[in-house]
Figure 1 (cartoon, rainbow, N blue to C red):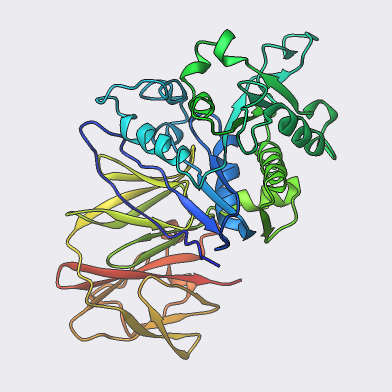
Figure 2 (tube, helix red, strand yellow; figure 1 turned 135 degrees about the vertical axis):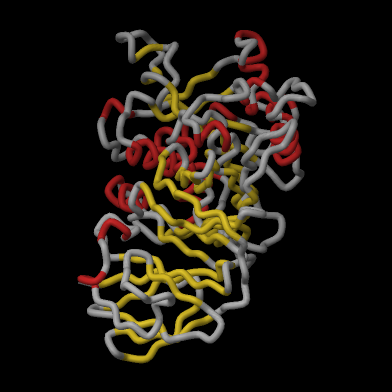
Length: 433
């Protein structure tokens, strides 16, 4: 079985004719030949979080046992982090024609190639739409013009295509998704846009591009009127699983599919690593603003196990985003980096220990960093007159200024390491209650 790694790496940069942030492609494959491949694309509209937090969980927590699952959770990443539909225009209206100077050109061209890959059998495009689709008008929220809680097809069938019976598949998936709804009004229905004859705007869409090339595609639309993100993600995942079942794609997941469990998983933002000198941050509990944070003045790379994590530079601050959610802002200390230090010795509650640079270290009552010849240690939040390097000092929580802690519970502190004036990395010390 092929393994899938989620240590996604990014270089913070700007291109003259391209998006600032590029999408991730996560390929989960069983390694078995001649099995079906499902392509799931999320985030084509940046203000539809149900459409990108669901594939993020799909990427992090699902294992494929049979068949293949390809996931693009953040196709319109620049718009996602700004919580806007499309900062360069509507990306989902660029799949028929697109100008080579359009900032979405590279991404749209890549996604077209991905859809047309011979291994891809079916594509799902994930959205949040307004209202609740119904075949007859009930009120302003429940009517044929609404898009929410619907599986969208462009036409009834694609003759001679594998999984080409679009209407039948959509209807069957919806029947299964509609079992055990959070609320009865959340039921899914099939919406046929009859794109070729009735909807010129949809003729520019991702799904219709796929249909025109004899490749089955559906849009899954959860409702923007559902305010709880965990509810929308629940329905997206439930529907995706039904499509996998139709395609004989077998999977396992590390959690029971329920709204409560999804809420817990969404709260786990993941980690951020800033190489090459290792800086590691656990993101779920960071304070909203962190001062004295070392940033390489020459270049800035980062990695995360969460494909929706992005770091945006604004003057001398770096904003950590999880999709459309601001996690924390780092106030940068710009400096030169040195990667000569890999491990350090220390005492934790009086016991000898060794730790890698970048680690999160737990202690109860105290810690003490062992001296390192040629290096200076700075414990952020600790100060003692006349001390240049804060090594060889037993430090208890009472000696630290809580305003310098980096977590909301004010128990985690940064320890920086320097060689001359160059930054060599840090560890984080957390006092356990």
